[in-house]
Image (cartoon, rainbow, N blue to C red; front, side, top):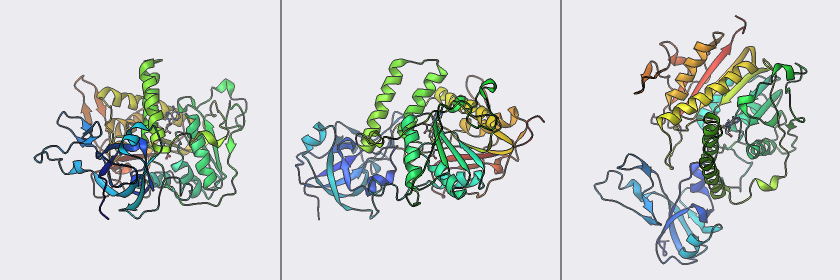
Length: 452
Ligand SMILES: C[S@@+](CC[C@H](N)C(=O)[O-])C[C@H]1O[C@@H](n2cnc3c(N)ncnc32)[C@H](O)[C@@H]1O
């Protein structure tokens, strides 16, 4: 059937799996960027998703303004991409005016989707959890063994946590921490949905993950200063397949970025922080609708840290500049300085990981960015700072080699990357390679005797 009522252009939201746009049975009001004039309730409309394009000013944009699609000149090399990605037809649930006036609600009932995928939005919540290939590889590279004690330092929403628990056949202990209360709830929810019992969650700032020795009242008590016992998930739900939410979500990114600004600049600029929080809230509303996290009524326990050397393996899936994510639908705000700030933040977290893992243990460090400053340079820092660390080979190997060499910035700062021979021990996933994954980086370290 030909759409009678015109067309709608949807926002591509980096925080939502792109496929959810393709498969969702509904289009929500906040996601609509543009709509043809005179669309009335009940009209059949063609629905497309806007894809961000590089602009002539060197920035990125989706080529729309004030609800109108800008097709640009045919000579524009991106003219055809600006047509956006057509995802199907639906019946409008409100008029054009209503769509742009309402703050929430369903705009279009998608009754004829191009991609006959099951919906990933709520309907199959808990049934599947989509994982990027590099994320699956990361969990395998950690190689968790049954009955081990594993720390997942930046765990939300729990994609890798649950993958690790599954690899351990739910035997042992996976401690999953995240800074954000709501995100810890997300981990709990996911683990419960998947029927995994070996996961214990805490709200914890990974920058303070090591408890001070005078507070470590019992070295056999792993969580030195936890306020109460952590929440170990007891769920009778059957294990399910995995669909990973986009781990480096825009929401996480906004939160991370705001936090990093505060960490790095002391209290930071309050107005910047507030506006990022607002952005985050709006993005979450766009993605989830209101109140998705509100109704769970779960408990999130705080931990104040763990004893040194108390984990067999530590995964640091670090918050990062997320430059590997694609499709890249929102313009990033990164500058050279902000990229360096990410790297500083990651090093501080890595320092904590090094203290927490036992001699003979393993650390896996991963990011979803292609910025060598947050990847190869972190490896260089790790190997130069901690002589008892060595790069370990990874299985499986799906990514390419890391970058060898260094880069000199205009201010004279030289960023050191890998040395010859080290490149094959890390995995760099290049988003432009035929493997067709997001950009990602994985390094695995063996931990030798710490007093050596
Ligand atoms: C890349 S995401 C983690 C994705 C997750 N590992 C997964 O596979 O689902 C980074 C996470 O780090 C968390 N984070 C950022 N700073 C943190 C900190 N100081 N302490 C603990 N968590 C932090 C963010 O809330 C975000 O959830």
